[in-house]
Amino acid sequence: MDYSLGVATPLLRQTPLVLSAMLSQLSDEWTHAREEPGSWTPFEVVGHMAYVEENDWMHRTQIILEHGTECVFDPIDREAGFERYTGMTLNDLLEHFASTRGSNLVLLDSLVQPENLDRRGVHPEFGEVRLDQLLATWVVHDLNHLGQIVKTMAKQYHEAVGPWRAYLPIVDSP
Image 1 (cartoon, rainbow, N blue to C red):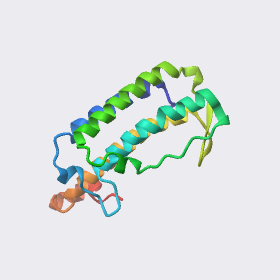
Image 2 (cartoon, one colour):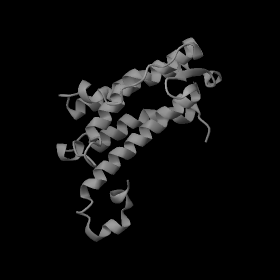
Image 3 (cartoon, rainbow, N blue to C red):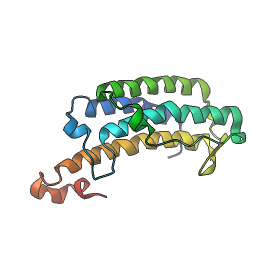
Image 4 (cartoon, rainbow, N blue to C red):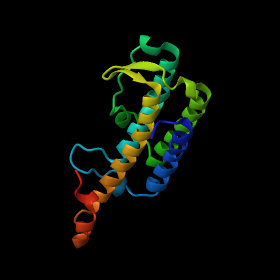
């Protein structure tokens, strides 16, 4: 499927609702669990998503629209949200993410027109990239981290499911 603002934007709008529905009423046993040492907890994933929401998608979109390939994107610290949101409750973090996402979608709607999707910018690692690639990555980034949260949570019961484990490949997935 090719990228389309009209198809992608509703998914971006739903992500905060999905995260809230999935995580907002859960205990720390679920939201601070790790799949394995060094992996991210669901809380840390939401912190990462909130940090990137504040510092990446629309910032890079504006760079592409204003400067094109004359300006290289700043690298993103993927774990900066861990420290930034320390001490925040998960519900407050979910609300912050939802608010920031809402603002970003309003800005996206005001800035990006379909005829601009082939505009280019420069990623510090990948080199030249198109705006539609950046915006498609925003969507897949959400889906990737929703999957990461689900997998981390499912693996908490990898032994508890007993013989049903044979039918639940998520608990043994890498």
